[in-house]
Length: 309
Image 1 (cartoon, rainbow, N blue to C red):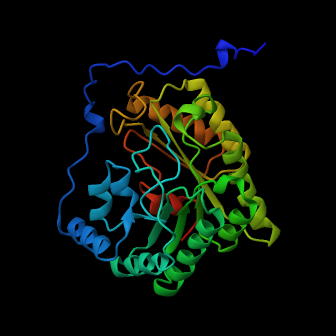
Image 2 (cartoon, rainbow, N blue to C red; image 1 turned 45 degrees about the vertical axis):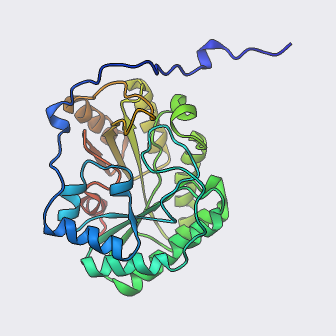
């Protein structure tokens, strides 16, 4: 007889139509505009580059771009995973563009960026190739913009140890990998991801760096409002603190479309302040917590707070 799954293990997400909740004042961002914004957008188009700012519909795009900070997204604009919260398009990606790292570095140099954040879509079709692309962009930025710090926001490479080693040994200033949500919601929110695998990824990055007598700043982010409970968030914070993660970002989930997971609720600024207070008490070196916070929001200031110059 087939064994039934205990009801307690099922994740219930209410998909019934509901009247959209009015967006609170603290979640309203200025519309993107200005000469710097348009120049950066023009440069990205000319070089055939993608930014996660646009692909993920980041609410801070106007503020960040006008400060000449952007998160470049490599390895195409189609992700091999279908995470329920993410606005990045899904599909079968094109072959890896091996000249892309050079063009990203050129854009970083042209913009005079002091702290570059580089991310990518998931490329489960070629984890080693994806890791090598991160290595190439780190090396290219070192050549074309030697004063620039490099932060990489990587996928989990499906737990392939060689891929992580390649990236860590290229010695970016910060290695970021987002935990995204609480374990209970992984099945519906983070397709293809595994909570324990992401925790291991962050811990192993520190261990791999230490093998050669080096250190690396690790960072992760979580979005709230998908149905998690406060005690679940604090448990995740403790798991991350136990892995010696240095930087934590916490931001509000905003549903990109009707095809994505519904938002459970808005967190208040007071709740974000509470989460920051609790996380700092667990030992994180820096915590960025607020309604509009995203993984690379104020990334330069986050780096400085950990002692990076």
